[in-house]
Image 1: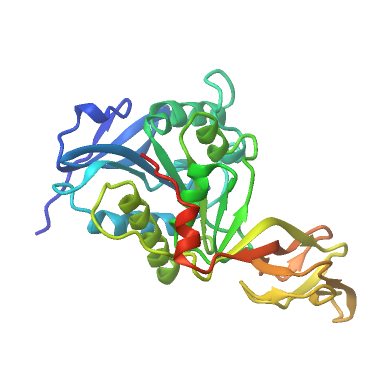
Image 2 (image 1 turned 120 degrees about the vertical axis):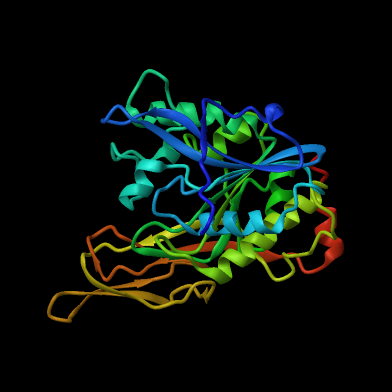
Length: 339
């Protein structure tokens, strides 16, 4: 018979009170639901035997974006607390109501990743976001925020990061992505709040929603372990993962202007040329209503896979003004110490 493990609840994350060299599992109380029962998020804290930085990893801030959960579960099995330095703090399910309902949003239909750092005297989502930031996120020294595409879309494995920020650029290059996009911090996102509060943060987009994609999860896991090596939390050589990675200075979406039944042609990470047909929209009789062409060249970061669309639907996410870093020497010139 397997052993039943009872998980305790805590009011907030107090790292200093945790025993070194151990894995700790508990819930953190954030707010109450309509039953008067607390919303509690699960935390796994691996407190190393030796001092060092605190690396935070958050997943499922959008409740149907699940690849980050699998990444965290695999990471737990890879790290040995008795030889680790610092603290690895993992929140596998950040948006509890959204996760339970299998949806992107909080239960009041608000996107948590647009309202950070929340408000203690406002809506239910704003209160939840406020407690999440103040009880958990502000205890981190660094943050990897794990996401996926939204419903009806698919993503490559790509990074959003402010590449003009030395620490964020280094964190991005330490990952194992197919594409890195220069993306300034949008107001209201967890990444923006963290970077504004001196917690270097990047967004890791791991493929598709509502699924576990093991190859992308394994590639993401490699990037997290590489980050821990660079931070000297674990031993090992830092790997050059961006040898073939495409670096995009900008990205944008191509939209439809007609509604109907859509076919989107390019695959993820494909290079598209200016003028190339990337989608056709048909009416319900199979006649072409619109032919959508790329207005510039670039790489496909993500795409729509939902056949029935309204006018104004996102079709293809394209990264433009691209380059690659092809040698380890050039990579190391662009890395900076993080601790």
